[in-house]
Amino acid sequence: MARLILLLAVLAALYLMFRRVQTVPPHKRRAEYIKLGLAVAAAIVVILTVTGRMHWLGIAATGLLVALRQLLPTLIRLFPMLAAHHARGGGTSGQAQTSTVETALLRMQLAHDNGDLQGEVLSGSFAGWRLADMDRQQLEDLYAHCRREDEESARLLDSYLQQRFPGETFSRQQAGTGSNEGMNRKEALAILGLAEDAGAEDIVSAHRKLIQKLHPDRGGNDYLAAKINQAKDFLLG
Image 1 (cartoon, rainbow, N blue to C red):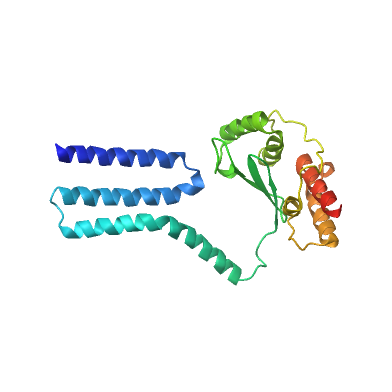
Image 2: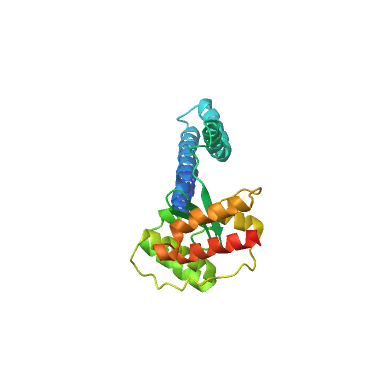
């Protein structure tokens, strides 16, 4: 009976872990599946050891699996850092310049070379999700949430939707022109994709390149064009 209870408890724990993995943003699931696999392996070793089908080596193996599981988050963080270091070692010429716009609910990045937008949800039921991993229905739900909670986030998300679903309607709002109120130097530099030591010439040049891609008269994006104009005006005073 005790063994049966142990088996049921292990299965229940593994099921709960599996359900939790399903709620994690897609780009983070690989790490969670690795953790789940280690947990399954540890559970098998424990069961075999308790039932007498594996000797002391099973206990040692279980300890090793537990240690690996504890170290896994560190290793997951370390390998991307090593990859990034390797890429930096090869030079920075291949790094694409980007602009970053952040609101209460979203963070969006604009690639300067091709104008592509990539975004991440910062809060709410989709917190941690990348917009590229969300389907049409999920994006519609997120858009409705943004419209209820934060108008600025709704406008920013609308910029992404216009690019991903050209010609389609999402009950869009007017982008508005906005103002410089509340903007700071760090935010303005991020919008233009500039470093802290950027001078007036750098600001004008970055603004010119970006606005050529996004100006509404050229089929670009009203909201992002307005943000870029605001950033330039703020930095040039």
